[in-house]
Length: 201
Image (cartoon, rainbow, N blue to C red; front, side, top):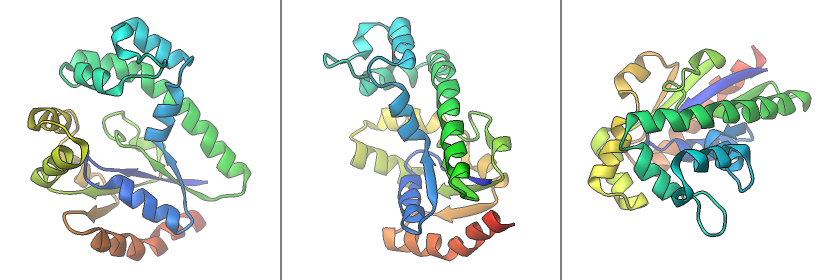
């Protein structure tokens, strides 16, 4: 089993790349999906979050209020570190289970979609790294336009991640996503043979 870590700073377009990889039949294990799964009502991670930040982070229906939690943790590095200490081990356990399931099915290549691959110190856990990148001003515009964030919130989220120059220097493949979805798809399509070759190496 070989693994490729798919990552990119926020609003770079990583999710669109993941969707295109799935369209080519590749298995993608999405850290964001795992993160949602581990904070479902009744889970230990959600209870730990509520214990730390109080009932304000839980909606009336019992689900996590992500907007409230985001406003807390992105305003304070100490709070963000506390959240990561709860989330990352639980996500990693679930990710390992999903990789083992893929191996049991006979798959030889899995894409691990991990937004915080570098920040969480997980680069050594994958065989290769695929980075999706876009200029900071483009990413800021996407956060404001597509996610409804204020400019200040967008800047805080961008600042919370590693500078992309450091990531680019430690990456095997880079997909540039400052243009159209069609242009992005062409780049992914061109990369597929190289990615598949990793699974047969």
